[in-house]
Image: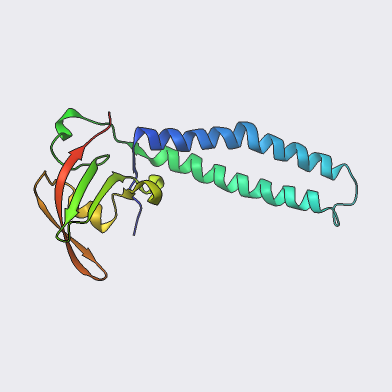
Length: 158
């Protein structure tokens, strides 16, 4: 399954801040540490040198990923026309037939945050919710069978 290239402004900023931190702060720190460790002599038995080089490779891989990912992302801004329906970026309050309640926010795959109930637009729940309105019934296909939810509230943080 391919990742959707959508992101909220806050999600894009978070990835951009990580990129800037790695490039301007973390990478120079590790590069200095590797240089200092290399100056100590024999690199074949120098644990600090080996660990520093490994960390530098890891940082470089993440930098490469972030630069490519940020370049390909499309930022989705809130629009007043979204009010009343579930679209990307929405917070949705739901209730099922057992009166269990849940609130989810629909975000891009780079912004998934299980602790805060941020779900990707590519998830079965989000796909079922897109375009729905308050009081709509939503049927979500899960591995354990279909689950029925009712939309109680939709809101956007501007």
